[in-house]
Length: 119
Image (cartoon, rainbow, N blue to C red; front, side, top):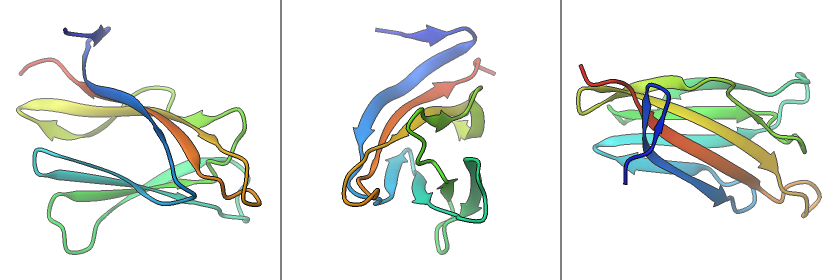
């Protein structure tokens, strides 16, 4: 099966029910992407920041800050996260807060890894 969304080919897509507020890590083709949920009381709106993972040449940590919205948070358009097999690699997601444990019940993450056109 091959799934496409406009110019993108779906590489992987799914849903993860997070455990408490533990990071969610994707590892494939020598690449590591770690998503970390953080609350910042000094900011009201959800946003994200990226940084390299210390000690890893091909690792990126994405901080999902204030993604505890009942109505969800995420990208409007896919964001380029690298290159995979000569094709641009994009990521798109929506995340929802799971209530419980005094607001630390984890997150529901819907994600899609997308590939751009062949070069």
